[in-house]
Every structure is written in C-alpha cells, then in structure tokens.
Length: 249
Image (cartoon, rainbow, N blue to C red; front, side):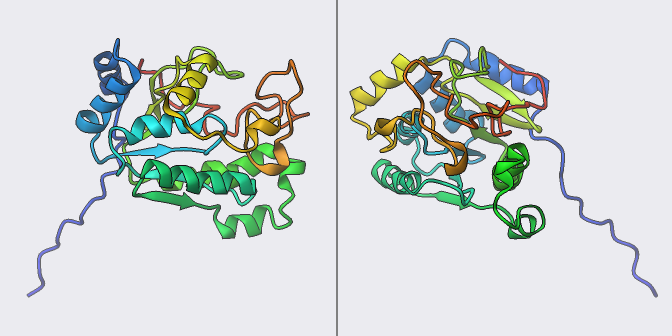
C-alpha cells in the first residue's frame, strides 16, 4: 500500500519587516540618544538577528566603538571588493581587534560573476555602477541573507544624503542608521573623547575612502566625498542609493 503523500516543508521567505512594524519600531526609538537606541535594538528589538556592516573607512571607528560598548558578539560584516587599499585592510584588523569584536565576517565577490562580468578587473574604468554591483552590492546582499536587520554607518551630512531616516526598510529588512543625525564635528569630538585611531590615509588627504581605483585625494575646499568616483556622475556605491521600501522614521 502506498504511503500517503506528505506535505512538503516550506521555507519562510516572507520579509522580516513591513512598513507598519518598522514604523512602530521607529516610534519606540524616537527621542533616544544613539547609545540608548542601539541598546534597545540589540537587546530587545532584534537580538541575535542583526549584523553590523562597516567599510572601515575614515569615520567607521565611531559606530564600531558605539556597538562594541553594548555587544561585541554582533556579527561584523566587511565587504572586501578585492580592490581595497592595503591600509584599509590593516585598519580593519587593528580596529576589530582593539574593540574586541568576536565575529568578523569578510565577504568577497562571487568568482563566477567576476569571471563572467569583470574578467580583466577593469570594469571600474568604464562602468563603475556595474563594478560596484558585482563587487559590493551582491556580496553584501549575500552576507545579509541570514539577518533580519543591519546597522549602517551612513550620515545625513554627506553628499547626496540629506535627511536620511534613522530606521528604514531595505528589501524587507530593517536598516538602522544610528549616525543619521551626526555632524562632522560630532564625529571628530567622539574620536577625541575615546582616543580612537584614525584611518592612516585620512592624514594623506583622503577624508572618504573606498576602493583604490575610484578613490582620489580631496583638494582644499572640496566636498569630503569629491574624491569618490571623480569624473563620474556617481556619489554612492549602490548599497545606499536606493531604499526599496518607505522610510520608517
């Protein structure tokens, strides 16, 4: 006698958050300072389900330090585009070790995609958006797959980022921007107050640091991000340029 058919197990692919629940979380965070906001998120809202993403750029140490004072076991994700400055890789190791993070996850571009779409490694020179998609956006999407939320270090005062929310939705995932309202002066004061090490290239005229082919020195009087993708109509790598859902707060 044949066995009765069994129901197939289903994989839950529903988004972790929708606009309504994200807005409710945003309301809970309203009025809290940055540390209190992070404490509530990490210990109550999304404990064990959130990743901290860092480029280990010029201002990254502030957010890394803030999170480290609350929970050093939060997975720390770094996208190695394989076009990074050696100084950035060294700075990554120094900061992660100094601040005591226990779960540093380095994700790299898919070698199959590189072979198919950037075999020469020169796509940055004629299609920087496509290069960023292959080397940064796709790897980060892959790295964030296990998580319901992620913490971003972007700031509202930087070029093209005016008025960003502290909490928003990104592909059904909660995206947290704790430094959204911080000014450059706030960041500098935090560096000084906590004796945090600066990225070694900052003193060499690089206030904003990305991949080596698309990062140049900034001249006096220029916007701090003028050295990113110089000569191209481009100010973002693609991770932050489009948020797929409505802002929550």
